[in-house]
Length: 110
View 1 (cartoon, helix red, strand yellow):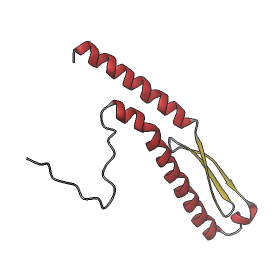
View 2 (cartoon, rainbow, N blue to C red):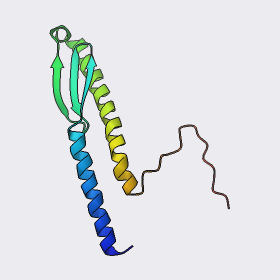
View 3 (cartoon, rainbow, N blue to C red):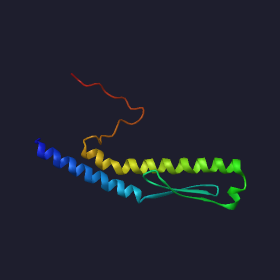
View 4 (cartoon, helix red, strand yellow):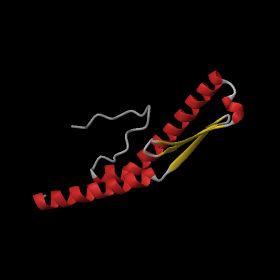
């Protein structure tokens, strides 16, 4: 592969990565835990927090609810981001799915 083709491929890859990043910023995930709502985008940035009056009445409980809501939102955001990045990874030749957990990996035959 020539240098020109490599540069062209790199430009295409960068363009695709920017498009995916923009898309992730516009995906909003809402995670709720007993009156606490956390809204996170798929770039894992917190966009908004909503706390009901009932949830706010007990500080200790509120802290636990916030923690659970944040973790739910972050996990979902990571899942969405990973799915969206598959395209870019495939373009880089790194999109091969790993063997499922617990699957035996055969050694190469010689």
